[in-house]
Length: 91
Image (cartoon, rainbow, N blue to C red; front, side, top):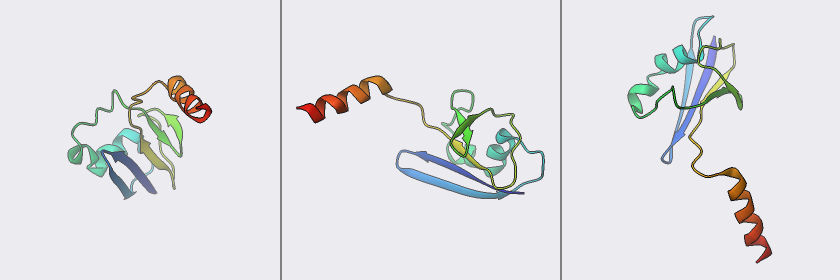
């Protein structure tokens, strides 16, 4: 089964295409990809993951054509960011 894995960190974009056996989980796919060796600072217990933009669990099974994504931590309060952009437009 063909899937892809996307990850962005510190300006580096990684896109792996993988051919995996049926029944693999998100976590297994990430481990098989070698991404954790390439980026040892990724802590899967702290990071959210998803498939095609929807948050998923590490033990979710993947399907043909899935795009697994490892999300960056949120560094700003989304409500405050929105307020700041509104204030800047009004100024």
